[in-house]
Structure formats: structure tokens, C-alpha cells
Length: 168
Length: 371
Image (tube, rainbow over all chains, first blue to last red; front, side, top):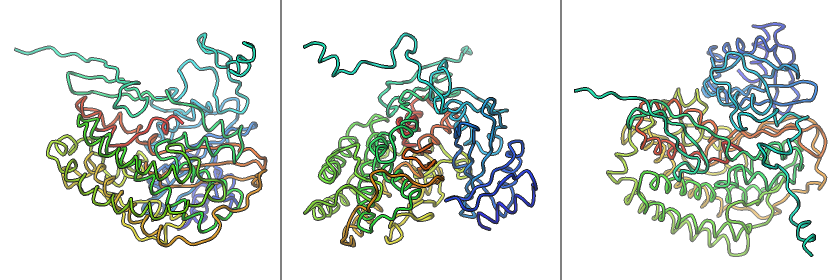
């Protein structure tokens, strides 16, 4: 079984829960219904034909009109990987956690929650991971504006060259 | 008589010398035995992925060095390959060879630092000086190649920045002749030392299934006895042209997948890198090292995934282009990030002193976790 056959198999199993299959991309991907993503992933993991035993990446991308979460699955026994995507509304992105299928999702979902602002329902430890707990907003969003100061510490500084010239 | 015990919360880091950069752990311990070690990362977050969206494809290359400054050649190569795949650029053969040569030297340097600090972390200072002495010579070689010792910025989109300098090949081969016996010496001095084995064997045991479930990669995955190397299994660059083995953990000193297995995998990988280097240095073809890439590089809209076997394992680059001169989104999935995710689970029931062994054996590097 190869990548495209896997997408067809998923489509055969889940029907219209698979919204789109893009075969022309550098790495072909399938867009699926957010409500079905955990079910589909569990199917791909448990099906002996695909045996996707590893979630190698989970990535959040902000496209200004929507937020996408990209799941890169990999099957070590079958030696190939597939890419699944969900499209979420930008104002309230919520999707079920993948932690129940693969443990590696725990930290990757914390990163997406922190930097993109996607809420993962059912996640065991949904805290910020890279930014401070009280940081405003989600830095990887396209409309994020860096605050001028954080707890009285300025995040900008005057150019040292300007300072040198002022001394003259 | 029975003594009452109570849980104690300890802080370790972020400036603790054995945390390999700025890592912090909140340790919940009962005496010397940990109930849990909660990693707290993010002290080194510089939002490198966001910077990529502001500086463009060529401009991002020096920043990739900072993703993992211990093996910067691989981050260079990952970004180069991602951009080349988006833009449909072919790297000249000699350029690929230069990439492999510099990257494999970098792998040896990175593993030397890893095994050296391993000794230091568990209280042996001498192995560190031995390992660093050899690493210094590699740094000298690479400095001659690209002018930098740590953050190389050697590769470009479409190849490498400079060809090998005159006489460099001979120097590199002379170094390898010197290095192979040194590794034996290092083994007999440190690796097979009884105290060393006692400290490492049976500590932080990771089963193969667990390693895959937590997405461990590289030496950490191979230490658990699973034979998987991107260079062999999803080949890229010119790696298919070389003959080399993939060392895996066998549990020869304790349990399969313990700290000693991961350590020995790194030691043996240096041998294999040396083998690749000898072949690459003797087979390197003539020709250009850099493909013609427009200065205003605008790949077609699309997205791609790249996997590179860095010193810390499978490094995944995900790049989205919107057709402009700036990438829309760049994401790096690193081995250290995945390895940190498993520490909480492994730490339960471990001695506090063994936490240090565990961190060192997973070879986590703080900038790679935080990016």
C-alpha cells in the first residue's frame, strides 16, 4: 500500500468525512473533517495494512482566513508516511487531542496551543510550553503584534549606533 | 521505629551545568527517589520559525545554525533541501559531496561533545577533556572550510558556499587516520570502565514500542534496538553511494534501551561516520559546488516536508511557500523536543542523580527544543 492508496482506503472507510485529496502537492495530503480526525488516525494506526505507529509531526499553520493543523503520520513497518490536515475557524479553533492515539502528541499540541492558539479538547496538560504563562496572544499568528514591554522590561531598544552619534 | 517521609519539591536549573543549556526541571522527590520530574522549557525560545517569515529564503540560512548550534550543518542542510524542493533546484554532485563531508565531520564533533559531557555529568571530568581535544581538531578543519567553528552558515540553497580549500582533503584524511585509534583508546579508557557502566546500565530504559510512540528519533531510537536511519531508509543527498552500517543498541551491558545502549550507539556511529568520510573524500567528483539560484528566490506556492538525519536524529522541516520571496510558514521538528517529552514518564522512580544521566543519554540540546 502506498500513500495515495491509503487516502483512497480512508475515503472508502469514512466517505464524505474526507473533504479533499490533493495528489499534486510535493507531499500529497488529505483534508479531513475535524470531528473525524482522531477516528481516522486510530483507524490508520490499528489497520494492519497501514500500521501508522508514529506521529512524527503535528504542526499548526495560520492562513489568515483559517487555521490548519497538519498531522504527519509515519509507518515504520510499512515504510511510508501520510499527511492529514484539518481546517479550523480562526476565531475559535478547537479540535480533539491526538494524545489518546500517540503519546508524542502531548508536547507537539502544547506547542501549537502556545504559538498558534488551537485548543485541544481532552488534552491532559494543556499549558504554554515555550512562551511565559502570562504572555498575551499567540506569536505564530499572522496578526500578532509584539508588545512593547513585558513586566516593565522593554522588548525594543534604541540602536546603539544612534546612541553613539548622540554622544558626539 | 518508622520515620515519616514527605514529598519535597526541588528546582533544577535553568543554570545547572548538567542540563545542557538552559533547561529547568521541577522535581518532586521523596528523599533521593523522584516521583516526577517536570521539564520546564522555553528559556531559549527565539522564535526562529517566525524570523523565517521576515527574512526570506536566503536570509534565513544563518539563522538555521542557531536551531542547533552543536550540529549546525544538518540544520543548514535541512533548510537548503526544503527550499530546493520548493523551488525545484538540483544540487551539483560535488556540492552534495561537500555537504555530506561537512555534515559527517559535524556529526563526529556533535557525538564527541555528547559522550564527553556524558562523562562530566556523572562526575568524571577527564573524558570531557579527551573528547573536546578531538572535537577541537574538527572545529579547526571546519573553520578552514567555512571560517566558522560553531555556527557555520556553510551551505546555500543549491549547494555549498565554498569548495574545499587546497590541501584540505589530505588534512581531513590525516585527521581520520588519527581519529580511528583514538576512539579505541577512548573506549578502553572510559566506555568499558566499570564505574561508568554501573552508572549508565539499566538507567532510563526505553522499550522500542515506547520510543516509537513518543516519536524518539536517531540514536535514542536506535539505542532501543530499532534499526532506522534516514540516511539508509529514506535516502537523501548522495548517501546511497556509501557503504556503512547502522549501529543499534543490543543491551550488552544491561537492559535493551538503557542509557549505556544510547551511549554506545553514538560511539559506534562515529566509526561509521569516519567510514563514510573516507569514501566521500576519495570519491568526490570535480565540478561546481553551487547551482544557479536567483538572488530573488521565489518558489511556487506549495508546501513540502524534508527529513534529515542530524546528530540528534530525524529532523523534519516543513515549509509553506505562498509564491512570494518570504516563506509563509517554517516548522522544524527536532529530536530533542521529542526526547524531552518522554523525560517526565521515565523520571518516575529514578534517583535524582540518575536524572542527569538520563538527560545526557538522550543528548538533548536546549536551543533545539525551544528554537
